[in-house]
Image 1 (cartoon, rainbow, N blue to C red):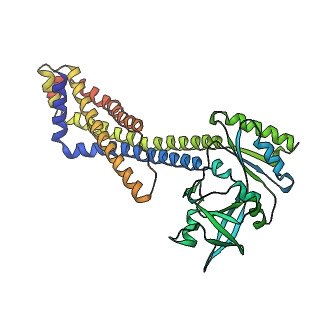
Image 2: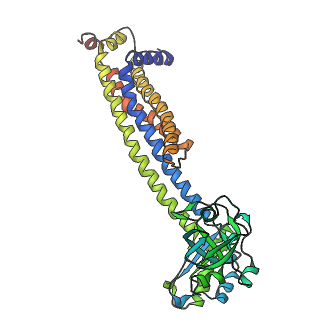
Length: 388
């Protein structure tokens, strides 16, 4: 008997028991769709986190010092900016300030920095301009505001050229930032950016404990990190525990490791459903062997070989798992998109994951279909014919 005839007989057998076949495939459908949905959500979350980290800036290094005795002076910051691998340096002072415009008042995050901040932190303006070196030199009372801040105090009006009261002092708005959304749980749009000299007066502190540095080359960030640490060791002898240099790539690698572990765990949990579905296929095929014992006996009596019987039952198991896997794949993609729209989740479908889950469902059908198929092929034709 040829392979095509075996497939035809297997499909006919499945079609004759529609409800039982559908219930058997249900385990594979749930298993494959679960794998696709959970892994896609995990990968989407990883992509979302990576995007948020990238929003922090390109080739970014963050220097933090702890305590007033390790405050970074202008001379020390200039020295760091002259290192070979450093492209730009942006010192920062920050705090919370009361902002008022007309009858509207609110607390807003204040950032005092220099002109290089826009490059280092990849910050762009949608209207107006950013802080310039001239603003710093003349201690200008100007401000660049976030999109949320602009909406809060000016609504749909253009804020550029208008004034805000920041802790009782009038500041002219010269620019509005492009919205960046939240980054790692922190909103970046409800902010007021002023020249660092002005910001120090507003937060009532000249201490600079944070500096952002941009490397020249993405491939040399580890070298630049070590270069900065050596410079800091020279500036602050025996105080290595009082400062830290964070490489953006290290953060991305850590998050990538965590999300990969999470993806594997979720995929493993969902794969258990596939194994359960495989056991269901084996049980149904064993029942089918018992029900069709006399049919097997007749086929073997008229010349069917053991290979023919083995192939037929194995094909039935593979078809059940394959069709179930295909339906599960389509269901997983559909439900994933539905969850993405309803729950505002980031879902990332990877073709390799979908192909692997489908192939795994086929493999499960083969593995769990071998035992009942083998049992059917070994039946003695005489005993099978006498079976009631």
